[in-house]
Image (cartoon, rainbow, N blue to C red; front, side, top):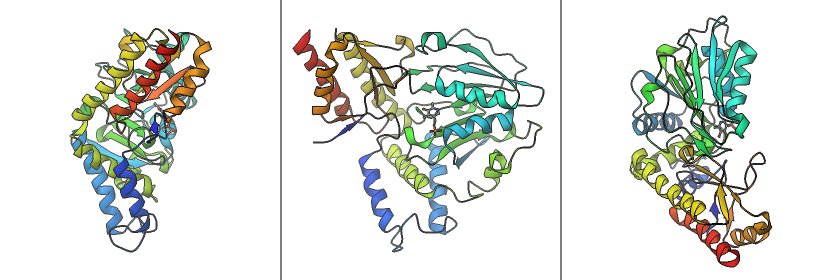
Length: 356
Ligand SMILES: *Cc1c(COP(=O)(O)O)cnc(C)c1O
C-alpha cells in the first residue's frame, strides 16, 4: 500500500525521478561513477546544468531578457540577496505581508535600508491576500509571495506596476502558468515543487541588476552567478540533477498548463469535501485558497483522535497543520496523484459516517 505524502516540504517528487536518481547515485551516464562524485566541471555535469536551465526556460516561456541560475542558501538567503541587489541607499522597498515567509523577507530588507509592508493580513492570521493597496511608483521594488505555504493562501493575480516586481514562488513554481516577463526576479527553494533541498532557482531580468549602488558580497551578487553560469563555486550537484529530472518529468506530463489542470482537479476535490462535510471547515478566504496547500480544521476537536486514526490507517503522511494555524494542512504539489487526494477525502467521509 502506498504512502500518500502530503508533506509541505521537503515533499513528494515523482516516483520515476526517485528511481532514476537512485540509479545515477551508483552509476551516472555509464561512467562507473556516481553523479555526486564527478567534477561539476566535467562535461557530463555541465550537460545536466545546461539541460536544467533549458527546461526552466522552455517550461515557463522565459523571455531572452531573463537569466536562469541555480544558487544555494534556500529561499531564505534570497530574502537578503534581493535587498542587496535591488535596494538603494536612499530608496525604499515595498512588501506585501502575506505570511511568515513574507515578513522574514521584509526583515532582511529593513536590515539594509528602508522597507515597509504596504498591506498585511497579519491581524487575521494571514488567512487572506490583501487587495486594493497601491505601490509607490518611486519604490526600488515591490516584493510578494505567490503562495503562502503555511496559511494556504495563493495570489491569483499580480499587481500591474512599473516598479520592479520580485516574487518568492517557492511553493507554487511550475504549478501553473506565469508570465515571467512581468517579474524582475522570481526565486524558489527547490524542495517544494522542483527537487530536493539544496538548490534555489532564480529567474532574473538582466537589465534590472547593478542599480543598488552598494557593495554586494561576491556570493550574494546575482551577476557573479550569471557570469559563471551557476558554477562560480561548486553547485549543489545532486539537487540540480534531481531538479532536472523533475523538469523532464513535467515536460513529459504536458508542461505547466497540463499540470495546472491536474492541480486544479486535486484542489477542487479536496476543497469540495471541506465545504461539503459538516465536520470540517477551511481556514483560508475562499477566493484566495491555495491549490498547493489546503488548510482546514475539525469543527469539533473531540473528533481529532478518530480522524487521526483514520488517516494514519490509510497511510497518509504529513497533514498536521503548521503550529501557527493548527488543524490540518494537505500539500498537493505537482507530483501528487489525484488518488492520494481521494484517499484523504475518503477518510473525511468515513469520519462523517461515524459521527455526523
Ligand atoms: C519554504 C519556504 C521558504 C523557505 O525556504 P528555504 O529554502 O527553507 O529557505 C520561503 N518562502 C516560501 C513561500 C516557502 O514556502
